[in-house]
Image (cartoon, rainbow, N blue to C red; front, top):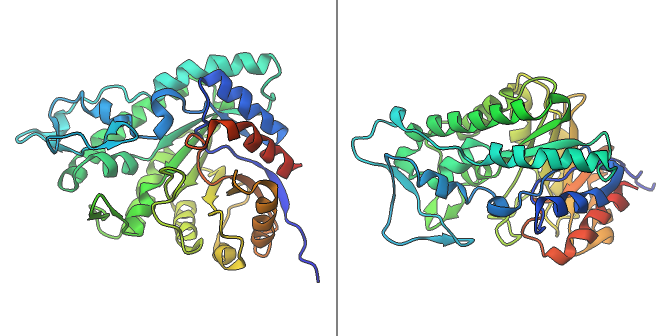
Length: 349
């Protein structure tokens, strides 16, 4: 018997777009057509490499110091960790604006203008993608200071969220929480010669609790979801997931802990995984009614043919889902952008 084709419910854009400016990013994203539910501003400029620009913000904090005499360059930015200056009370730290609210407040009027011109479909929301505090703390704070500094950083990030909520009407806003370093911690990946470990007991429960806490900070009426990720440095994962089992564990934990509706969930699909075994753990996914699942199975390297193979494999477990790229498109070649967005529209058909 022929396996029935799953229903493709729409498309999701993870965040970054390799474009010279915000308007160009919006116009490229519009090529995906009516199948989008939300549209990010492309994370152009200093945000092009996800959270790496946060190091420059933390450089401004009196009471923090870089560890190591020489810059450790990643994507042209200093990735050396920070530590508390001896004798500093972390409760006294004054963190500067982190840049996320400033970017959203700058981009939203352009989003509105392009909507009024018919470039962006009327139903599409303005999407702001934010890292979980775990991501920045794990990346930039030395292990012995993470417990002390995650609270101040989380408070600063939630202040950014408050400013975004004040600037963008709830009915036009989507907030996506990016969860990547969580999976490096769960998989105990070795980075920069050190094995990644949490600074708290029960890693899965602790990571889920932290992600649920920031999810619950997004009020009802604003769409909210999670992008689960295994990294995207030079379009490569820090570890290729063996299957979707760990992703499902995290997702189910979120569904249990988040007090508000989770409107969407995005999961990565490596380009070589068009086998049923990768998707099989999704049979255990306890997706709530009203939560859209998006699978990151669109890849520029093999286009429609590869997407269809992965869709068929996912269809052995799922009757319906939306599609997306595996991660953001900011690190993909600029000349591939238009084709990628047209691929979204073609697959959604």
